[in-house]
Image (tube, rainbow, N blue to C red):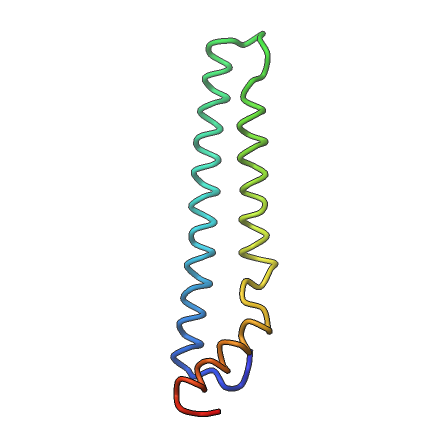
Length: 96
């Protein structure tokens, strides 16, 4: 974090990150519930049949993994972007 961030900016960034984490966990819960229902439907209707539920489980699972990676491991706003935002803010304030 650059030292030039105000307390308000730090708070806004923290709120955004908490919201991103909350959104991921909601996504995870919906994934679990929906896919459990798909497995149940498969088990009730076509027990000895082809396990078709694997395809939506895998497809959606890939999206869920990328969502989790973006929230927990990758910084969405890199240092270059932060420095550019700081430069633009300084320009708008009447600085350089």
